[in-house]
Image 1 (cartoon, rainbow, N blue to C red):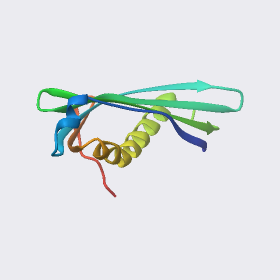
Image 2 (cartoon, rainbow, N blue to C red; image 1 turned 90 degrees about the vertical axis):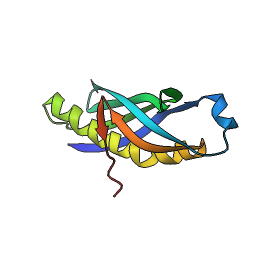
Image 3 (tube, rainbow, N blue to C red; image 1 turned 30 degrees about the vertical axis):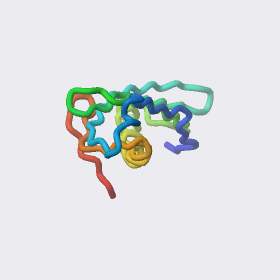
Image 4 (cartoon, rainbow, N blue to C red; image 1 turned 90 degrees about the horizontal axis):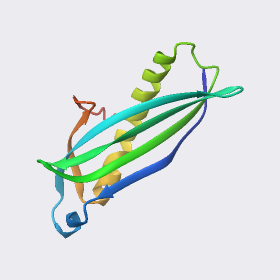
Length: 125
């Protein structure tokens, strides 16, 4: 299996306008949901990973996020479930590496991540 191309064509961050009135950084929790679809083409396979969710401070939702990654793969493994798991894990890790930069510009610092109901501790290395 060879990864040909990897792009993030869709990146959204919607922040509550009232957050701009706060002068101090907000400590928030990121609640992530994920979806993966696989589309077979002639010689390539597209693995589309969608990561979306909400950012909360206590019980208040302060922002929504939605990121989509498209990876073109040549000669993928036959087992679609393994392909899904591999790219989902890889893309969530990649998103968690640059998401803090996006959020810090909006005045949000991340306290913890929750992915599909499970607490996730990102690997910072």
